[in-house]
Image (cartoon, rainbow, N blue to C red):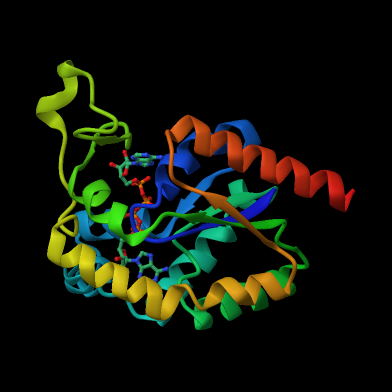
Length: 215
Ligand code: AP5
C-alpha cells in the first residue's frame, strides 16, 4: 500500500496514520514530524524551517521535496508507505509523481479527510503531544492518562494565530492538489467528523472498497 493522507491542519491525519500503519504494515512518513525532529536536533534544515513553521507558513518546496524523496528511498519504504502532510503544493505533487515514475512504482490511494474550518481551531489549540511515544491527545476529545500528563507538550504552531495562517495556506496551496489526484482516479474522500474510531472505520472501508473495485 502506497498512500497519502491529505486534509486541513487538525483533520486527524496524524491520529489516523498512527492507527492505520500497523494494520497495513507500512511506515508513517510525516513531513511535519520530520521537520520538527530537524528543528529539535538543530540541523541546517531545522534552522531554515523553524521560522516558517512557527508562523504557520509552508517550508519552501525545495527543502521539503529533497527531505521526503530521500526518506521514501529508504529500505523500509520499499513495500509501501503512508505519507502524511506531503505533498502540500502542486510542485510537491509533481515531484512525487516524477520520483515514483523513476522508481517504477505507483500510488494506490489518496485519502482526503474532510473537516470544516469551524472545528479546526478547537482541535488544534487543545492538542497535546507525548514527546516520548509520539501519541497525540486532546484536552477535551482525547484526554491523556493522568500519569503522563506532566510530560505532555504543546506544538509551537498550535496557537490560534498560527492555526489561522495554516488554514489559509491549506486552502490556497494544498486544497488545489485534491483535483490533481481526482483526475488520476486516486482520490477517496472521507468525513473526518466523528469519533476517531468511526473515522478509522470509514477510511478502512473506503480503502477496502477501492481495492475490491480495482481488483
Ligand atoms: P504538519 O505536522 O503536517 O501539520 P498539519 O498538516 O497542519 O496537520 P496537523 O499535524 O496539525 O494535524 P493532523 O491532521 O495530523 O491532526 P491530528 O491527528 O494531530 O505540518 C506542520 C508544519 O510543518 C506546517 O505548517 C509547515 O510549516 C511544515 N510542513 C509540513 N509538511 C510540509 C510540506 N509538505 N510542505 C511545506 N511545509 C510543510 O489531530 C489534531 C487534534 O485533534 C489532536 O488533538 C487530536 O487528538 C484531535 N482529533 C483527531 N481526530 C479527532 C476526531 N475525529 N475527533 C475529535 N478530535 C480529534
